[in-house]
Length: 206
Image (cartoon, rainbow, N blue to C red; front, side, top):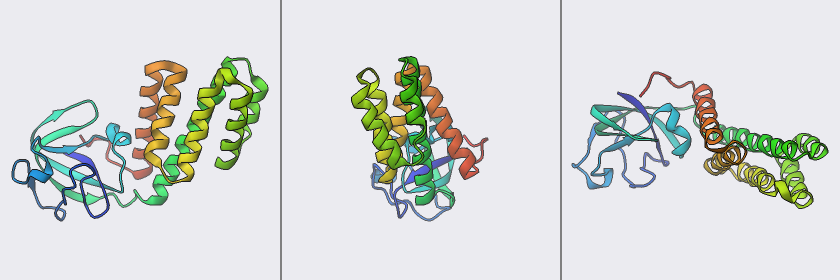
């Protein structure tokens, strides 16, 4: 099975600290405690937004795999090739896209509350700095939509400081606030689709 795996710089496991060997070398669970006794963790395209890190690798898994909500666990795996399109610049692009999505949720909140002029003002923000400033200003003016506006402000802040995972997390919860759990799921689906399209990933993987 072909899947994907995010690692820290230098092929390090984000949580285990395990140093993955060169591409093509098999790693088997139980042979090295650092790689995790429970197995080799990987993810499908749909799971990518939950595991963002410095490097993205295509990974081959061996044997039967257990599929969980946001990950796959197998007995063995080997890195195949690094996804070179996932760079710092790409992560920043993704973070900014998520920030604008959070803005759209705030605009929806304003519209539903009858604050049409405020929604127009927020929609006019053309940079992350303008978004941050306007969302904060409107949060003071429109307390009934304050949380959605502050979420948009926080997402803009995260995008500006290169914190893509947090910007994506905020955008998903901004959607949840507007449309409940289905909104959250739809936003995560949008995020995984954005990554797959931008990185030209194999939709047939995992």
